[in-house]
Amino acid sequence: MSRIGKKPVVIPRGVTVQVAPGSVAVKGQKGELVLPLRPEVAVSVAGDQVHVKSVDDERASRALQGTTRALLANMVEGVTKGYERKLEITGVGYEASLEGGTLLLKLGFNKPVRFAVPPTVTIDVTSPTALSVKGVDLQQVGMVAAAIRKLRKPEPYKGKGIKYSGEIVKRKAGKAFASGGA
Image (cartoon, rainbow, N blue to C red):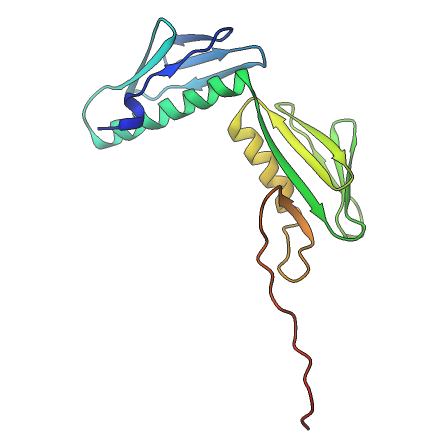
């Protein structure tokens, strides 16, 4: 049996959860999220808790029960607190700036890279070498941060590129100087 799926999701004050046929809507002070439901799980609201149950005792249904419960918990946290992913830019001349709804990144290419910011997230450039991706949906925040990081991944020799805040880049030793020999 799914142990995570059995735990109820506690609904904090100011958050409403509405169960409709085939979907669950979570609304809070930061926004609203909708989760389409699979037919293998059933969601019910009782007081200030959301319960997720599998329809049958199949292995896939129990797995979907735990997944659905985790997604609902992430949605509740997203509409109350929100999510944030910080990125750091390392390299001489590497920097970021915002121009309207476009993130402008100078990453050592011959032209600046333009990244269109989706409307579901906001990007704050705290300094030319640091930016943060904020939003209500954990999956969207992670995907946008990963897409920005993918534009110039940190390389292992000098560590230049875009990395997550707190990420450790394993460094490699460069070429050893050949001494002597013919």
